[in-house]
Image (cartoon, rainbow, N blue to C red):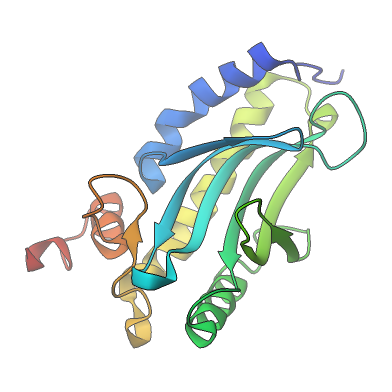
Length: 194
């Protein structure tokens, strides 16, 4: 039996059910984007005059033609154009390394309506491949767990000070990504600096 709950109300229900888990593991959503091709919630990160550097998103995506979204899952977007190309390349390489084994999909490119261009690291599944809402939640939770267990600790280690100056892209614009990983991982290396 295929899961066919791809209408607006069932999508809202899935967001409502997965949000507490996402927030608990990765941090509170900072933004939502809706177009005809995607509907996602996510965490965005900025660094000084570079503005947006990368984001972690969860939601629904239209990867096949049709009336409704065809896939769901997560992606990490890394902006590669804009100020400080060298550092942006380092972020792309970091995520490419630490997301190995996360997805069977290849890294792809993305572009945004605000002029951003970059790399997308996706983990999507066709919505009709699921038999229930519970299967969807299990898939999304396992995607979140991979980022929490494999990417956040590497960010927290901050080798080469790569994540110094990276902040969560939401008011009050004061939480550093390192402080966020401290909080989410239950550690105190960075929050003790205050």
